[in-house]
View 1 (cartoon, rainbow, N blue to C red):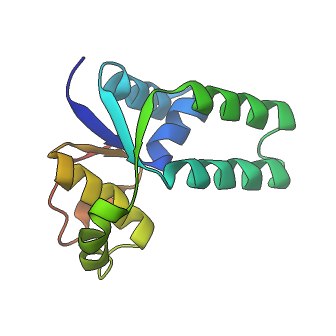
View 2: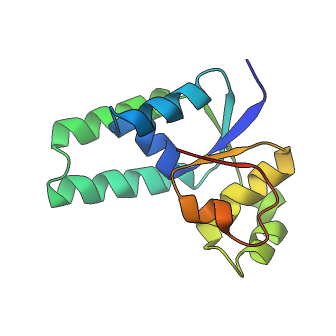
Length: 132
C-alpha cells in the first residue's frame, strides 16, 4: 500500500458511477493508496446521489448500489477540528467544502484526487492536486 491519498466527492463518484476513462483513472489512483477524506465526504456523496436519483439520472437501484459500494470503501474520515483554521484561511478562494479536502491533503502532505479541474488552479492550494 502506498501513502495517503485524499479523495474528494467528485473522485469517489467517478469510481462509483463512471464506467469510462474518468472512473478507471480514479480507481487506478485509489487502488493501492490509503484513502482519506474529511468526514463531510459522506454527506456530499449522499446528496449528489439523492439529486441524481430525483432527477432521473440514476435509478433507485443504481443509487442504492452506489450507497452500498460507498459504505464498503475503506476511506478514513477526518473531523473538521484539526483542520478548521486552515479551512477558514483557504475559504477566501475556495468553498469551505473544497477547502476541507485541500487542508487535509496539506496536513497529511498527501496528494488530493479530484474531478474538479478548477480546484487544481485555485490560488493558495499547497498540495499536489491530481485531476481525473
